[in-house]
Amino acid sequence: MLSDMPYASAATETPSVLVLINEAYRAAAMGDLGLAVCKFRAARSELLSYVKPQQLAVAISSINRKLAVESHSFEAYAAGCAKARGRPTVLLSDSLGLPREGPGEADSFEKTYTSLILRATGEPVQPMFRRLGTSWDVVDALVNRAHLNNADVLIHIGLNDCAVRMFQEKERIALTLVSEFLRERFLRFIKAYRTHIVLSDLDYTYTPLHVFRDRLHRSVDIARRARARQVSIATIVRPSEKFEARTPRMAWNFDRYNSVIREVSNQLGINLIDIDHICHEHGAGKALSNDGMHFSAEGHKLIANAYLQSTL
Image (cartoon, rainbow, N blue to C red):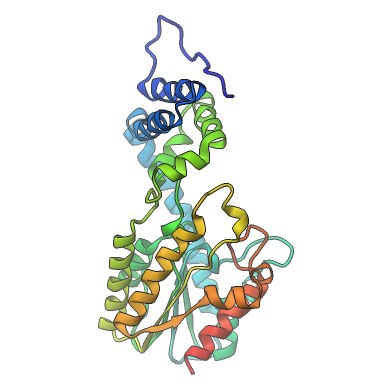
């Protein structure tokens, strides 16, 4: 049982965010987990009021710059590897397309599906991968950076959109700006009551389902208006059952978003690459990295081969 800990002396006004998280602990200690989760959620929302707006804005801007540098560097490296001019390939995803360190991982550019597609075609490949990226980043990239005329386009997004979150993006960053004590109060509560928090709001994701659907429609429309030759969309690989104990109904939520991907593919008549089915058919243990979500080197080969076969 987690204990309630004092924070400020009687002479010091206690911040409302701490009052709320302490009330969450007290409710949990009394066995009222419904009230405890409600108090936690209120405290979570209060984080944005507690942190100074300018401080939060600076932190968000700093993180966005770092992510943009990584994304543009990978894109520039791919541009320098093209051997010939020709029909471009535009790839849009999150960190699933980027290299990762570790045994069996795609730990270099050469092992990523960008490189595998580039070597197979010899033609330009424009990868636009943003760590922590969502469907909004796909829309933004298509509007502002993508070379779409006569291009083959692959949209592979959704992992970050659909996962149930403990914090929204701004809340997550705000938590890094508070005292270590307050931050630990939140993190210890999550560790103890994560299942109850998740089940209290299965739609607490980065992107609501209807917004995800609208963004996919918009992405395809942008590509077509820019005269892309072909647009493909890939499903999200469902995590293994081992995640269910920590994040209940996780696979169920991924399936909801995959259903939207399939629906959009069917409605708009675009090519569907069911990488979820392909990975599980070949053994998710081989296709995915040790974290159970990102592609291993073998997984990168699977998606590259599936995409190349679809464009023949």
